[in-house]
Image (cartoon, rainbow, N blue to C red; front, top):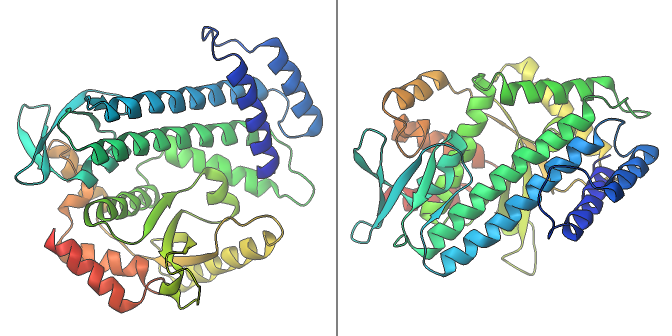
Length: 355
């Protein structure tokens, strides 16, 4: 299903390129309507969703075009803003401290790291980076902002198509229902512990990777990977870290992470069965990761961290800044355990602590 859907999006992209010079009216061109009809007949898109999917694809294309303009502005040494809506907080760079100064809505200035700037869009914070902010930080910022926005639109495309699609032979209705539940969790029940925890873990690692220049990567996934393949996010580690002999020491392995807060034996058994089913079901259908593993962190007081952060004026760094150093280290080690040798985890944490 996913490959056919992506093929449809690529076809729409070609049509968008052809009409790029035309004013953006929001209307669907006649030749695109014919293309959508073909998708209906092929079963790639369910009846009644093609126009919405096309318009969202157009929005994605516009974001990519805007990203290119922002990257040119970065190269020209200009100030830049991201794609997060809302009041733009001013960001100035302090060469002596190697940190940014950000102006809060109450007029107070606070320090922030490059990792804060790159990840805070996840928490709804919108920034304007002054021309003196280092080029590499501005570039990471606008790319991260664009990627986040495009992924949101991609999720919406999948959701709109899946909500009305009849299950294919061998494809259960509960998969479609799960996508619907995922949509509600992210948009209407965004304060659920699981959603908060996943976002905290993701932004926590992305911030550390940016600030400490760690030799690992961290990637968000779309709703399809989440529901059908049981992947909440992806960690990229050197293949040698998992004891796999390769000629190129820089070659990476992508590990899909299924994350849970619940450490009960029943939940652990159910999650492991889901992962086993996903791995066996997608052997022929490109898995897109090298492995899928379960990470369990029974975190508590998530809402307290979020509430404290909001009460304190939503400072840079998100709700995780209230975590103790012990908790941060436990989470860092807990996620990477089994993926990276213990010695390397310890070395990375030493680098992080040095700041």
